Image (cartoon, rainbow, N blue to C red):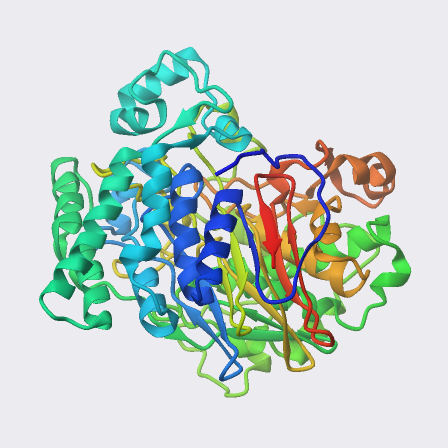
Length: 610
């Protein structure tokens, strides 16, 4: 494939009449388009692109990581969510970590790793909505992994370390260094040099081989796809992962894999005027998006002016109110009662809207009382529902995780290698759409076969009172999430972004840019953004920066003084800084049927249609 790095390059809005793809890397976008042109569905193209992203952006979204998914079936008009976050292993308990001296889940350890979710997502998606074989769909990723791809600027930035840190990395995580430094830790990567992933190609070939073997035995498409899943969760790959954990005081046992399952579920929804916003359930943070938008619904944001001090202040307050509720209530709904009907009710949004004020919240604002807005009244026995105005300060003081000064994680030389997430959005010729946010990065020991299980366990809390507290078999409330939007009952767009706690903030701002300010998808993702850090970070050690907001350069230069004057701790960042997310959007005009796409220049993202 021809390569031209789109990083920090402006580009026109992508247009199409039948198909549209927007993803975190041009190669993934091109592969998805090829699959669609062959007659594949959004599901087929989505899996093909996901595997390519695992190759070209493995330091951000590795195989086998997390993969939150929303899928719109145009034939039925229904949106479904798939559970794309793995579970805590059987041996992973709060006591396991505390007995080893940890106050939060560490990185760089086997115990940082969650049971993988993406292979389950892939096979379930192909079985229900795909038409092609795994062997055919995985072939482009295998080819790119074997032949190589140019080292791009984000890869270079994500793995950039000085000589001594590279040496330390090669000692701490030798196989990771073998994969990402090709065994030459003393030599940094160089822009545009060829980067291969032969071990990952071999893994994909083994999975495809399981499917081909099943077909030779006369099994049908569905059973052959299940053979791919079994090869991972019940076969050689699971056994290899468990063996590594057994040797290194890890937490995984074989039953964690053989019993693992995700599942299709009803998405959560909220409204903003005539728009309906879809999100995954509270095993991730996606519901923050409709909660924020319902708080803002009815406010004349357009009259404030785009990114004016009043607009930034209003949106940030709504985000902080929603994040206070995320911190108090969000958890795996199979283990934690989440008052989601109350949180997403119009009455609750109105009650939270009354808390918007002239001056900044100096600390994380108080959570609300969504139980008062639940359609079914519940007994409060056993539920901590004390509602206090000084909640932010009091709750943080009593938790057992540390509240650190800003940038603690970076200043302590944590050895971070790889970071963030990627995103994928597709509309196929039949109107089906996929929204998928794969993630996980090599900050824990990789397993032979170029398998990266990531550090997603660090999004658990070792506080038994926290809704996302660690329990074996439970899912943490992960940051990656997928979004989808309808207008007047018709599909409008699928969108999402990398960025940790910035993800929901970036989705909200992109949505408002399109819906309130009339921008096309490319203009919407290009526009300068802002973010709040006024709550404990989702990743351990859960750093917290009271009152801190950050503004990209264009906003900072114009609005910083005004925002400081109302109480914000304001920090400026560069233009198109990738800490502010990198949304991608695939949109269908519900009136004309024309397709439009946008891909954020803060990363290697690319949108294209036909």
